[in-house]
Image (cartoon, rainbow, N blue to C red; front, side, top):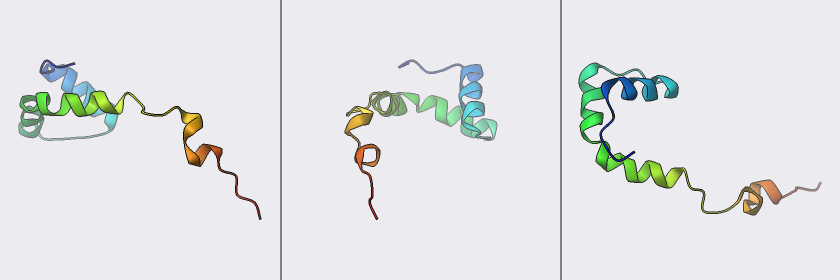
Length: 62
């Protein structure tokens, strides 16, 4: 999603995240969306599979 989201789409995304902002701040976020989009795209693509994560494979012994 590289295009600037509509106000309705932005409201939906913020509501899903549980974020409540004044309309002026929502509009500011919308205008800066091209800066956020590449960062969000990187979050959606995990670098390693879950099985490679140490927290998943490590078993502590007592």
